[in-house]
Length: 163
Ligand SMILES: [Zn+2]
Image (cartoon, rainbow, N blue to C red; front, side, top):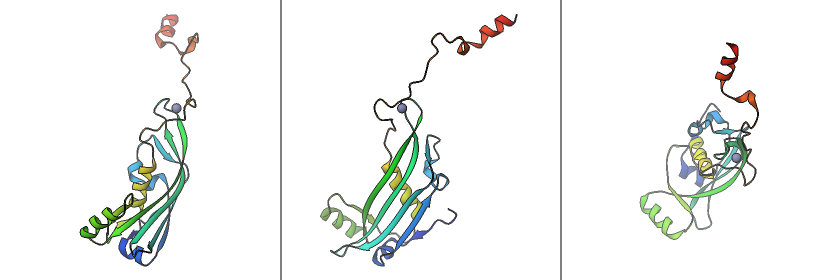
């Protein structure tokens, strides 16, 4: 993706705008780690709207498939991302505090005039990733250590033979 759209979050919500994003590994600046890859694209839909109680919100729905490096066997495995989050947009800090008190378990964000959408989605994606990536129990590929296989022994053995 060449252009990185940015939005005025409050306006985006109030106008009920929608934006589709398709992110590839290269778009995700914070996923530069070699241990994580996006298989194809992460598709995200950013939706603005106003709740029945008048509070403006932004929702991020995303899905995609990633490859993560298992920290037990160091092999890659697939992880499906399917997340859906809602954020209430507060116009100022006073409102931010008020809404946070009123709405338990809802994330409240301070309105921003220029919010980089790719960055916004990337933050959500990072939250959806496991703290320690691991295969499901019993699915690790245990590295085959040489037992009786002389081909994978010290290179010095071969040297000695040559003399
Ligand atoms: Zn593993």
